[in-house]
Amino acid sequence: DLDYKEHYYSYAYLLRLFGRSLAPSFTEDETRIMQEILEVHRFVPLEHRKVQSICQFTNALRAVLDEGESVMLKAFDTAVLIYIVPLIGGQGRDYGQYVKDFYVFLEQQGLSTSSSKVKQIIDSSRFDAYSYFS
Image 1 (cartoon, rainbow, N blue to C red):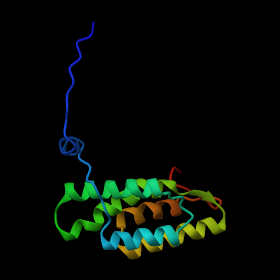
Image 2 (image 1 turned 60 degrees about the vertical axis):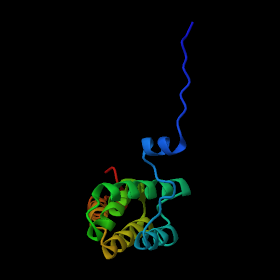
Image 3 (image 1 turned 90 degrees about the horizontal axis):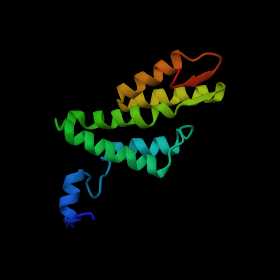
């Protein structure tokens, strides 16, 4: 015979307990950068759920950093490094050009951590094969 006791928790309490915001969103700059990644740098396969994960992660990290405007893209840069850069994996001259263009784009946006890793991928490529894991 199991002794089972019911517990009731409010939605607000559960939300506070698990720490997710109701409507996480990108900043204006993050939205612009993500839009360009989705529209121009399509060699990286990003689906809606992955974009939502990036948004959630960015918002959570931004709250942790909480050091003002200077770190706003730092959280997004870290999200790009964790969620997008590892998706790089392909071969051929065309693919190599896509990776190089992506590197230039990240550099221009000031995403130095992500662009540095993409540069490592480019520098370590052999026989026109590009992979995060090489």
